[in-house]
Length: 464
Image (cartoon, rainbow, N blue to C red):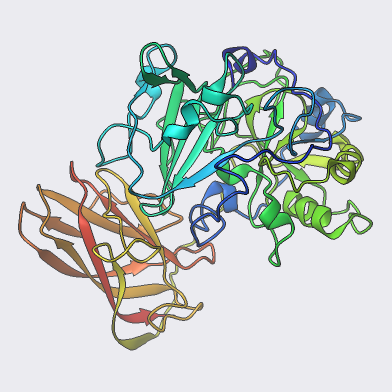
């Protein structure tokens, strides 16, 4: 997302069948930390929109894009016409021990960039090899090269943190990394950028969860998330986007954060299995408009195993007219149970303990001012039919005063606290918390303190 691309002036290159891969550190892609898809089940990237209402202006939006506009896979393997050139986004998975590099954002959006992860020293876990080795950064050039969007996507697999940079480049003279913007996302939370803030993407969204990935297309499970799409002209933004990068004043230009959905009636049965999986995800989860760029370009991960002789004609066969626009800003309704429920006791069981090894039910501690989302069903004997939990919530020797709030993961955090705590004192409180009504069965905890806090959640029963 270069400055010119933010203004809608850059047209992406065509994707062709790549040449054999050169040896480079991020390839083949290292497995992302489970559970997948990235982010909680209630995250906007993972929300099933197959039954969401169609926007009243859908036909005009599609007409403005151009009904006959074909779709294009903006990913593939190597670009044989450019030294070190690639098609698609690179992502790298690094350990929690990876040293942090301070990034200078002064040339771009310093006020809207994260200096580092919450509760951690400033810096991004950029491997030293990225300074001089190819194919660590979008575009493939060592150190980022002289121009282009130059996105850099890094996953700390141990702390379960996603780091994303835009216009990333190594300044050898100054001996430091520079980028125009940077954003950090906790994989176990649904953190959204503050209103008006960008990220490494124009819309203020994370990039990695919206990529088409080879391991998903050719895996055994269906793809369970939306994809990132670019449009030449956009106007304003709607949820889940947080940032406006308008390139048009026309009321029929889709806003960033708008969602296109492949029509349920579109027959995809004649395509290869991997392509069918990609297209089915477009029906179930849709495409989220995340940046200005070439119309109907679908973002994906660089991988030399892609066969663009298959992908290119398959994608081109889908036209904008095969899509409809989901109601702008739509999000699933949060349902509150009002009828009678039955209570079932459980042998006390630990649902979350952030002092343990990293994972969906362990570390890291809940960062300052952030959330942690935990999926309850399937753990501690909690069934998928559970509607609420009876728990004991503990803050373990916090470093400062604050409070914890429990709430359904698909709802907003309440204004009232579940547990107040003081510096250095372990505090606990019993509570009943509703689970997400979306079907994920997840619960969230928010830490209001100025530092990270270790949290324990013990379950002793459930309601259904």
